[in-house]
Image 1 (tube, rainbow, N blue to C red):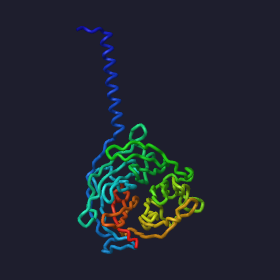
Image 2 (spheres, rainbow, N blue to C red):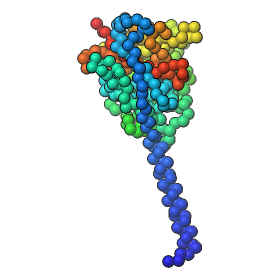
Image 3 (tube, one colour):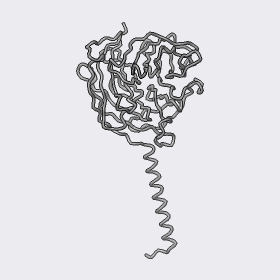
Image 4 (cartoon, rainbow, N blue to C red):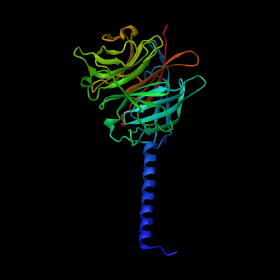
Length: 339
């Protein structure tokens, strides 16, 4: 069959349109489902919290063990916050470079952490399904998990957003929350480092890193529930807040960090009394643990609290290495003795 020139042109146009549609669908598919990178993690056990000493008790906290995490992947690092999906096992986290991460803590017969398995990372996406390439748009710092929803605090482009947890393909946020604190009060790189759910207050709670009111206290808020409103946390010394988690009695355990060229990095755990967390109040509480470079710490940024199978109340910490060869990715575990 001999085709006319006009018919050949029609077929060519149709073919080009089909190719364009196919390319568009492929690109759309790739954009909506960014690659999930599986990463092999090497874990060096940490058996002593205070370097060179066998001491296990540090105030009410008993050191259980830890891990120094390394990998050949350039994406491992900048780990800002995490929460367990299964107590002491499967976890989800966010990196301040705009990545989600997932994995599982592996334990020995004594329940000490010995490794990380099934670790993977994937880049955050925008409403169009495109990966977010600009760090300032995806500077994820805080994370709460409840009922299959991850609530993430972002700084610089300040927002608190909610995502459905889909470990094999995280999508864009389905909702942004009103974080109540006036946006002009949030410092550019000192936004919401803590996002935690309080069953006792029936509310998501956000606490900024170092956005201060005129009295020098740290802006925070309860975003829902009967006590919805802004409160502040008393700033104590040179420490800034990097994460927090609620304890069973309703108190808020805060992870804090300081850095100076003279003394290096320090970390601290402070217990904020539940009854001081109220609209218009200044929340405060005692220091439970403080550690400097004489301990196995780094830039400690993430924390979770969970019950171990034997009934122990656990506190887990992670560090953010800032993708620097001078810093480390650490995972540390403690028992919090509450008697």
